[in-house]
Image (cartoon, rainbow, N blue to C red):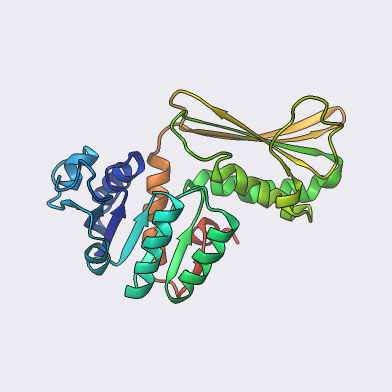
Amino acid sequence: MIKVAVSGAAGRMGGRVITAVKEDEALELSGALERPLHPSLGMDAGFAAGCGALGVPIIDDLNALVKGCDVLIDFSAPTVSLKNLEVCGLNGKAMVIGSTGFSPGDKALAMELARSIPVVLAPNMSVGVNVVFKVLADVARILGDDFDVEIVEAHHKMKKDAPSGTAVRMGEVVAAALGRDYNKAANFHREGICGERTREEIGMQTIRGGDIVGDHTVYFIGMGERIEITHRAHTRDMFSRGAVRAAKWVVNQKPGWYDMQDVLGLR
């Protein structure tokens, strides 16, 4: 039985992860973490998640949480994830990170902290999205520079970062396949007299509103034709199922930095 702890246990994703852990016979919820003074502290994690009592209270003691688990699943924020990663590294515990909004500096620090433990970090844990990543690379290589690339993503109005981590990863995948530097090619803003579109740029557009779980479309636009590759998330359960799949995989890996492409064998 693999012992799983969940960070951000009272959040939207935390609750779905806890439910997914409960439903998997190979896993046991060993701990649930929330920030100090959170109103859910002391509550049974199962009740907070809406899946029934599990006998695991929500706590704010990160060190105690990590010591009792084999792997920590974290859907929170970059600053929290980095702190959790540091403690997991000191205790030799694996980690699965689904947080988004990491800066290049955050990613570099995370990779340094992950040198002693196995870590899966993915902006999107969905199996379907990760298949799309692979397809995008193939399509971009085949089409080359003759097709313009635009990426449009839509999420609920509560999402704090933009563009989404998934959209950024899509841009990175396409840019790499085309031999471009994503950080130079990405165009996040067009307004007024901004000039003609360059061949190298990758447009990144963001929509926020209502309760959209997550929609992503990549447009490959040529002269007289276009290809649209779209993924739509209907519930958060696909993310939680992917995180659980990653947790079961990562505990058997050597220390290092992995993503869902590794978990799914798509390399």
